[in-house]
Length: 389
Ligand code: SF4
Image 1 (cartoon, rainbow, N blue to C red):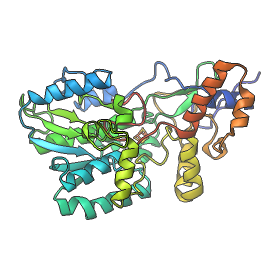
Image 2 (image 1 turned 30 degrees about the vertical axis):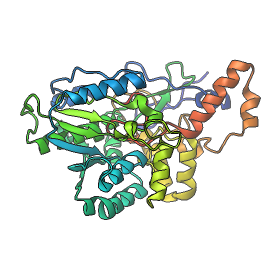
Image 3 (image 1 turned 90 degrees about the horizontal axis):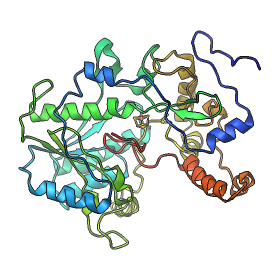
Image 4 (image 1 turned 60 degrees about the vertical axis):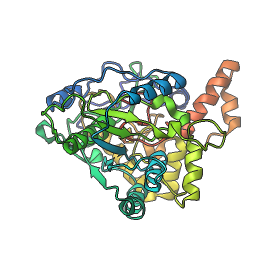
């Protein structure tokens, strides 16, 4: 068999894609690329990871988590700052509206960490909630970006930074695995660099302790995160002592099923009733976590943004990157986005694939994942992947 074709001017080889391989790549969970280079060193260089660690860790069961967070709050002094981590998606918009209405405590500030590559609908939504909700309620919305690093590696624009030759691959793109048989996913680092770090920098700035000045022990900001009950497992510690995360949606009364805590659907119902039914999902235009439904929506309803993603997908393979040796793709089929099989696979087509009961179950799960992608919006502590920080 002849060697895989090389991309001109790069050390990147294109995988061979037979229809069977495309099907295999799209129909199973994608593992993380082993031994991938990463940006941790880069963050250490910027001394952004050297805060005193917060030693509490959240348990994995919902009930344990509720009791621990409640117990934790009982022993704490008042926060010096109450901030909303505003991703501008469904859950965090719900929190902003609830705070503006006075149903939950008023935020001192809402911080939106901007990757520079959100869809137009998100920026428009942000402008509207700023004007119609935040400003009248006296809650400033600040927009922060990742800028800096040695050699100015981050310009605050994830798309542009990702296309700079010899930059690290930050996005969770798909590459062929070692055997060139299936897809593997590059470890996601964009959320940390473009959302988490700028968010923390802004919090420290507002506390009056810009890095490297240590934040005095006992001083902290309370950070409100829009995690709904259906995704409670995404609730995470902030991992630094000057920042404590809270998850108000997990404790709200009034859910449709009568249980404690709102689900995403409860949030959507609330937003609809409040005139915010058009709240978009907040995620980068070319996020590899998009499922086929999101890609189709982009192609069919936002052609300019679709073209932007298609161009980026191609340019990515023409750009030499650190941290990966194989050609990167935005779609898990390892095909150029313009050619990727994003149209809905019918149940009959999925059934034709199944050989036994286990395949049937796996197929149903795979169908759901391929179609819907990683659900939810991307924000500093509630990124779309299960491996959110
Ligand atoms: S939306 Fe996707 S590409 Fe954008 S920061 Fe989050 S994980 Fe990265």
